[in-house]
Length: 529
Image (cartoon, rainbow, N blue to C red; front, top):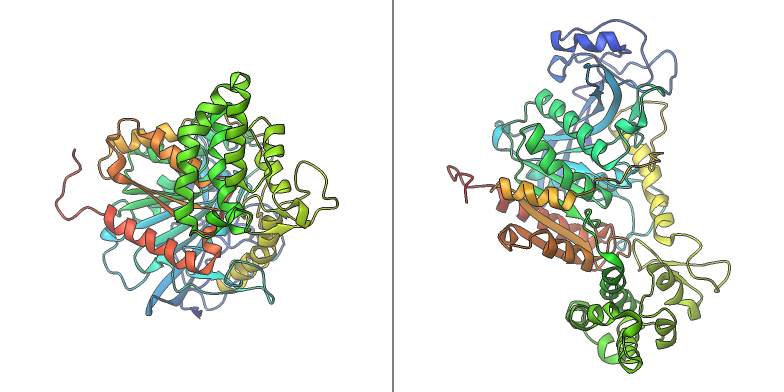
């Protein structure tokens, strides 16, 4: 990556609560300088300096307002793209206008675009809910990607390289870390965690923060897109309606990467049945299926499993203990054929095999477990006995690659210096899951906004947020069928983070690029049904 330090670190200042209230006058109060670089002035008041300043006294407390700007270029799809990277923090305000937290963000803007009014802005969140935005930031849509092998496994030396598939050529992007993730923190231990840690609280404060961000950066006119991964899909589905209803900010698109259940109840029958297509995909990958199924392409084999699931398995499990034994054995035989498991194990579990048992059982005789978030990954347990794996093989592998790279990248490439620890996963418990109606929130937002489109991306080998449940979300979210023309689904032969596989990195970004272009209305086309 080419890096040009034409713009450098902003003057550092520790912002007290009272001083923060001076923000509307653009004042830059004097005071102690924390380790994290910062400024009390809006971004427009940036003063360039000859060299970065360093804090005199190290501190691990959050500075709720800080900014560092660097300039770079990256080659995307064979063309050089110049861009500005802004890293820093912006406050979360309480009801009295005082900062109660500082959210860390990284904002990329293409610098050879004169009119930002037509330039799409992509707002990116990851999940957890206690996870930083690191995953999609340095492995999917951003200007750099991890130094990993073509299937996503770690290699040394750790690091990053230019992302020739980034969507930065067609859209500006901001990556946001919610409270306690990345470098984001509450300003004081006395701030109630209930203001942040819950489905509804999370959506409310992030919507307020986005209002501040969009206003500070003069992006109200820009077409806006939300992208979330895993729990981030719960987050952005809720934000779609919250932004629209309470911030009066309307979106053009929402991208759901490896979506959760979005608050839509399944019940025990659907929970048991809907996971079978994922089992089949994983068994196919590990060559555990009968020869006739194994000889087909994955995408040619799965429709047969999906049809069985909907038309035979769900009705059978619905009958529970009153299902005739002969019929139960017939269903178990088909499940065994599609899952790579034995009929005996399926019958022992009354047609309801948990994902945990599947990860342990599929390769038990070979001495391996399979990964939860990506079943291509294999693990080794202390004992082959048991009902579940000792650890998540895929997550352990990923943390190998991501943790060194994000710390190196933010400090060395983007020049953001702080003694705060970058939380890949931060403490957010207890998390209040009550009131999760985010799938319905997204439906309502689409119904009220004719411009709003939705793209779903799923990996076939994801056992945490499986692809068939993602399809089920779409079917049930729009029972009228009136929104389906604005909804699309894409599948990839990889797992939860499908972009770690090199072919899917390129393909997934192409699908996002096409989606953004499709969701932009032609000039003069009104938002009406």
